[in-house]
Length: 190
View (tube, rainbow, N blue to C red):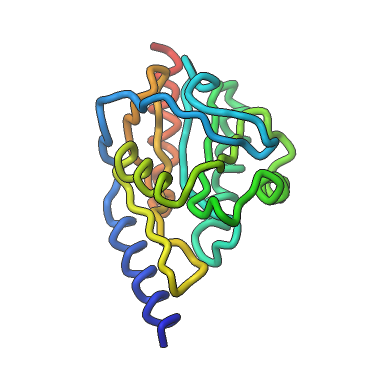
């Protein structure tokens, strides 16, 4: 019964988030951070300085939205590469106690053979990622004690060269990729 209630809560939570289309997120730069990438190396704002990047939140044991989100990220990576757009992708795990660099390395390998601009990050506590997501990206992460599934949003976040989160795009919105592409092209030409 607890699993059914948890799953129902997750579905309602996800649907409520997907109802929010694209919207501005913040006008302040993300403060400096350094976490651990899928290669076990430090990665953060220093490496992302002066770049356009797209952030999202996933975890490897996800049984619902993460699989299509990872596939969507791989598709965006390929599309932007074909268009000659220099974009970094940053996927923050919402389950850092499970998702080690080795597990993330295996996971990303299922979606792309080009990790040069896709970084899967871990190396923080559960409380830290929950606060980071809430404070910097205005999204909620909840890890219930009664489940190994983590509740999180289904959005991509566009971050400009100054480290400011400009917009949130829900991948469930069929037109989000056209808008994201248009916004990235504007940033690339500014």
